[in-house]
Image (cartoon, rainbow over all chains, first blue to last red; front, side, top):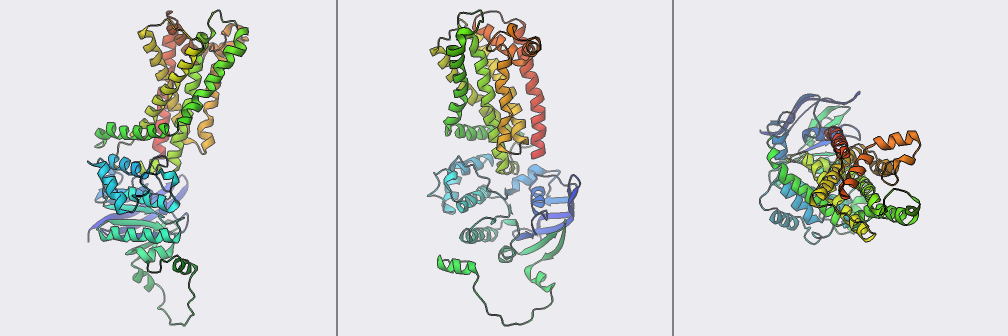
Length: 252
Length: 254
């Protein structure tokens, strides 16, 4: 199998604080990979190293076949990053944001690209409004759409659904699944177990600077004692109730 | 660097972006112009009668210092914008893309030059209404424009350091207050002769005085003498030092 990302023995410290203490994992091309961990586990540090924003202290990190420390430009050609907070220009309109990113990716028809993206992701109506007037969910959607300009092969999403309402989250999951269906490799971090369960082909758990478990959901489940059959009355979760009321029963 | 040849086009995109910011918030230019114009009105019509400068046209005497004050307040917007870009993750987004990295910073610097030039033109027009007159020809005016541009660039790089290393919005713009008040302790408003010895030594040897003297001489058609070289040395010196530190702060961020 071809690997989109290979990480071997990755170390990173901020001054005295050792954040990553020998992280190893691989991400297959075209798959969805979830890095799971609690707050402060070092997920964002991993993302920043993979996306060439931070230099590793030790180990090798290869993204799309290129070493992140030696060939950062080659890596940047293949990736896009959506950070924890929507990095959109609030003073510009949605369309202007898209055109700007298309220009920076040196695409030949930036306006046309922007129009296509707006249509494809249902943002046409809001296209000429300033982003400062967008709702949180729309801002995040635009943020992710910006990352898809120029069809990067590998997309990094750092806690993409933190702070989103359930509808926006489900919508985002749909986009992620479609992307992976189209052959894009998705690397996402999350602290929501359900999100990893819903989306990921493979899951790795980062804890105290190391990957303590990784595999498919089925493999991870095998690490635990086999399931016992118990009868438990199933109450709907508040999220299910909410979604049923707002008419999104079919989603997910 | 294989992205180096994109530098010009990337910087063009960055410049276009922040010029849009300015054109959509003209209030920033008005804010920048307001304080220096108010100072000019105050000094000409309130204090002016009591100030002995040895010239018959106090607006002419005052204008160079007012222009420097406008630049010092104008550049605080550069550090504000840089701080927001950093805080909102926009710099990180740009840095994860295959672009010439320094184009992000240069876009802000060029924008600062353009927006300050607009404020300076507005202030000169107001000064004309208040009786400012210059006998200088095209060449001295170009020299004045050059000095003002260099001073703008020098302070903009100082602003970049503040914007990149600030921890809060207030911190990002507060650094400019001492710069705005530097002209008061110089020959910008009153001749330095009347100042107590210690203050006078400071006033006569700080950058604003030589820059003010050089511009004043150029605008009144007098030979600028040594002041113009001292002024240039200050501007270039500040610019180089600030550039080095700003780039260091920038690389650390990104």
